[in-house]
Each structure stands twice: as structure tokens, then as C-alpha cells.
Amino acid sequence: MFDSRLVRSSPDLARLVQDGLAIRIVNGFLVVDDIPFVDGNAQVQRGSLLCPLELSGTTTTPPSTHVMCFVGGIPRDKNGHAIDGLVNDGVERWSATPELTAACGFSQKPSAGGYCDFYEKVTYYVAMIVGPAQANEPDASPYTYRPVQTDEDDGVFVYVDTYSSRAGITELNDRLAVEKVVIVGLGGTGAHLLDALAKTPAWTVHLYDDDVFRSHNAFRAPGAASFDDVAAGMKKVDYYAQTYSVMRRGIVPHPVNVTSENVHELLDANFVFLAMDSGPDKKAIVDTLIANRISFIDTGVGLGKDPGGINGQLRITTSTPGRSEHITKDGLISYFVGEDAEYDTNLQVDELNAVTANLAIIRYKKILGFYADVEDERHSVYVVDSGDLHHRYGTSDDNRSESEADEGDAA
Image (cartoon, rainbow, N blue to C red; front, side, top):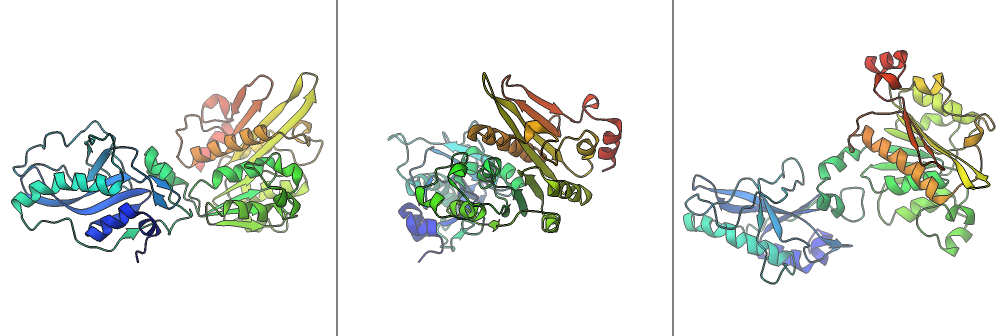
């Protein structure tokens, strides 16, 4: 029995292993090691084939591309010359890890228009590469019968993230693999924050909220809750932990609110998202996070019903070590109902909760280097009726006070 569930459930991968090829599954890529090839000096070396897997659950589907990449060198003919039609420098060079980055790509399209499975694709390229090697060393063989190596069960996801490998962003996605992220408040915005964070490789996502999941929550939450879900009377954090456990591990529910009494539980977090109502505990949380240099984003949704329709503003305010003065200096976060009325109404709409959450996630991913970032702003406001998006407290001199610039530079 194969150790890998992908191999167990995929006849094409199982057949590759049974033939004796040394396959690995790394970050959504299929890697075939120990492939003999001839280098530019007509010497036999060994390298690896590399291509992204295509999966439906835990079973492979036919490859969507006929392209294959090679790690470890550029295969040549027995004399060290280029093989006609094999190497194509115009194809994308995939990377599963820094050590598994392609040296070249191949583009051999079968007459049928595509490979029927990964067995056909791999063996086709193996034959083209190994043939010249065996002409120089008859005993050179790719069939080493090495045990299958796979990372598929070691990460946070229940099934392999083939999206990142297909999109070629594996190395960027790895930057999101922080140990602990916290969401305080699982209302509309907090639920959408979880929906986005659940798809990142953060090792743990901790949820804090003592409310029960009810019908009104379902109408501004991602996905579709069933009648039984809303009738069960589950705590929000337990409902969401259960819902997202089908996709990933590491979601930790805490069916309590964060207060001045338990805020210390957040002090080992890499990042905190605040999606909670105003109240006296909020100031204690913000002050504690700033004092302990914990990065966080506070979100606010302030909507009202005007004659022309729903109107208002969405806000995200960011604090990182050395970049927090703007919060206290300009009173950007309200702590008591009525102090900042546009962010204290109960009117919530699903898509605006989602916009607020996604603006916060984009800022979070910029901080971690996933997205390019020119301004590194710390406060953003979206105005519903005009569609304007305003950014403040960025790195340019006209957006930061002199004292805050000094604070950031010192950090």
C-alpha cells in the first residue's frame, strides 16, 4: 500500500511508482527524480522532471498542459548537442521550491492534442531524455524504485493546494505561512476575513466571539448555511471552525469575547484582525497590541439608509511596530458607541462586509510581501456613494507626520 493518498487514489501515479520511477509531490507539483540525461559536455547526469498536478479532490485529472520542465540542467543528445524540438526556452519555468526551480522547459504536444494522464505525459518525456543517456551509459536507468515522498499530509490543507503551483506563486504563498493569526469578532466582516485567511497557509487561525450563529448571520456570511446550521444554536466560532475544517486544519475556536482580562492570549500572535463592535474593551485591546508591538488591522463598517439608498463608509486602519502614532494622534478608531457614529450603526450588507474584509486582507498580504506595495498606507476609507478609495499615512512625506516618520525610521 502506498503511503501517499494521492498515489493510492490515482491510477496514473500508482503506475509510475509501480514502474519504479522516483516520484515526489511537493507544493502541488509532481516531481520525478533520478532522470539520467546528457549535459553539454556529453556527460551523463541526473535531474528531475517537474510539472503542476491537476486534481479533483484526492485524484488526478488529465493534465491541462503538455508542457514539462526539467531541474538540474538542460538535457542534450548523446554528443552534448541540443535535441531537436525538445528544449523550449519560451515556456514558463516552474518552481516548486528554490531547490526545485526549472532550468528549462519542454513543449512536446502529442498528436491527440493532450496527454490522457500523468503516466503518459511523464513516460513520454522520460523516453526522450533517457534515450541519449543510455546511448552513452547503457546501465543508466530512471527506475530506481525509491519510496514515494510527499508533503501532502504535512501542511494545513486537507487537500493539496494546486492553485498556487498552477499560478506559479508558490514562493509568494509561502510568505503567508505564519504561525498564528487571530480574528476578533465573527460577524459579517470577521466571517469574510476567515474565508480569505482559510485559503492561506497560516498554521493556525484563532477565532474569538461568544455569540451564537443565527439566521441573520447567515445572510452576511460567505457560503450558504443550511436550515440545520442556523437551528443548531452553535457558537459562531464553532460553526465556522466546523465549516472550514473540510478544507484545512488549524482553525482554533474560542467561544469568548476578547476583553482586558484575556487580551494577553493575543500577545503571541503574528497578526490580529479586529472586527468587533465599539466598547470599553476595544481600547484596552488596541493599547495592549500597540504596547506589545503586535501588528493588527482594525475594521469598521458605517452605513446608513439615505433617500437615495444605503450610503456610508468602510474603514481599515493598520498598526505595525513603529507605525502606530496615527491611531492615537488622529483618533482613527472609535471605542464608544456614539463617539464615531458613522461606524457604530447596525446596518450591514454582505458585499460591503466582504469589501471591508478583502481590503484588510490585501493590506495584510502587502505587509507580508505577497503583493507589491508602493505606498505602505496605514488607513484606508472606501466611500459607498462615490466609489472613492482614500489612503492615508503612507510612506511619502505628505502622508506621514514628522514624528511618525521618525518613529518608523527608528523601528
